[in-house]
Length: 366
Image 1 (spheres, rainbow, N blue to C red):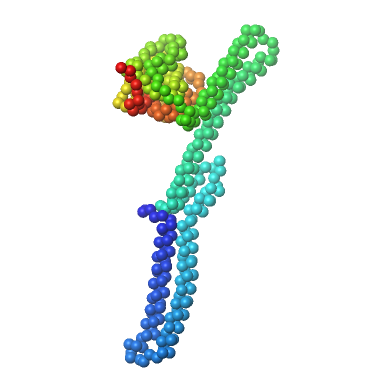
Image 2 (cartoon, helix red, strand yellow):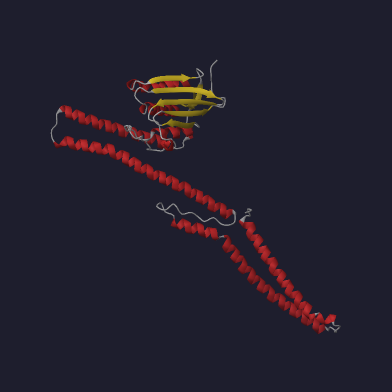
């Protein structure tokens, strides 16, 4: 349907109605005039009294006709206005039934694509975003409470066991060490949650500087060498061209690499392969993190970036974690304008690709 603004549509309808009523009134006047002047055609003599009577009748017809036209025009204009603002009433009614527990209500769209149609559509889109955000926050709160509850239950249970009776020094050390591990897990989760909150969408806090990619990659791989050796994994790092530098935020980019490397090592099979490679592809620089291992089911590839989401593969031992690592990676990649792609095949491999737009900003010393 062709778009016509509400203001123009109301004006157009009123003009049409006014013209129609005016034409009807003029038609009545002409009919009366024709009836009273019919005697001219029959040759009758028209006196001054006849003319005065004719004008009197025409004046009365005009007066009554104008009064009727005004009443009809007022009724029609009111009806047009009522129909035109009907979507506003729908908006009010919808707003009255929307609560935090009922965000599914939507405003019916008007038949005309005018300003009220755009307003209704915009409010519906806003409600969609609010419903999505609220649902995510509910899930986040549910998952967070669950993750906090588990270590706190372990801490409480361990403390209760310790105070029931006197224990040996070795038993105390064992139980206290367990409590310390759980406290460390809680600290780790709180820190990751604070990171997610701190960098919700704060581009102003980014500090860009030109960093050598190879040095940065080696620095991030270093802390994971013990885990790589413990799993007897084959490790390979290849950054091309050599000495290439990229403008980025060191903290955010290092966090992204650390989390990807940590996941690659954590989910790799014993004696598997870990590989990192970087290469330039037209106006982009690509960093890939490979590992051989359990892989990720195809239907879960988009879900792995959600907070507290952890992939589960039947037959594989569940690996401890909070499901926040890749959520942080996705958030930081969005802030740095980096595209991240996860490719995987069950029980074969997983590849995380970072596609970094360089637009001629990459620096390769001669």
